[in-house]
Amino acid sequence: MRFVVDTMLGRLAHWLRAMGYDTLCLGPADDRRLLQLALGEDRILVTRDVRLARLAEARGCLIRAAEVDDQLLETVEKLGLAPPEAEWLSRCLECNARLEPRAKDEVKKLLPERIFGAESEFMGCPGCGRVYWAGSHADRMLARLRQMLGRKGPG
Ligand SMILES: [Zn+2]
Image (tube, helix red, strand yellow):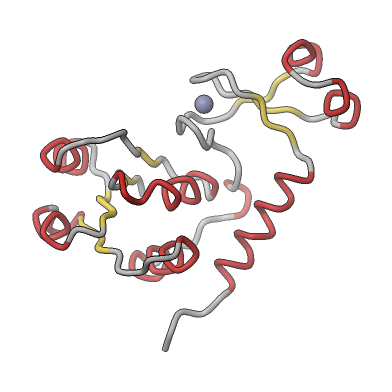
């Protein structure tokens, strides 16, 4: 399942990417562009705009929650998502590209010494060049995802 997320839901887009889903979130984009992406690329259009969700018909996913944790849970429950943990943190949070393994030598000049010294596994983004590594930040994101997905919605 792939997504295009309304500009207003940028933080939700970030967490969908963190779960490994191909998620577009454009800068300011008009409704027509969002609909084109939903229909043309077979993406679910995630939006808080009732009218836009209706226009997207079967591909629309209307989000009512205001807080990002609740929005994520609402999306997961509405669409019956069950993201496998093996896919978590497999995608660039900034630009959506799939991350690739990077050799330690390759990232040496890109990272602060303390991180380079402490970590041994690195992933790189072929899209924007960012480097990711398994460390405390990644652990916190994984813990937060487990916590968010483990919660039950109201009712
Ligand atoms: Zn990137």
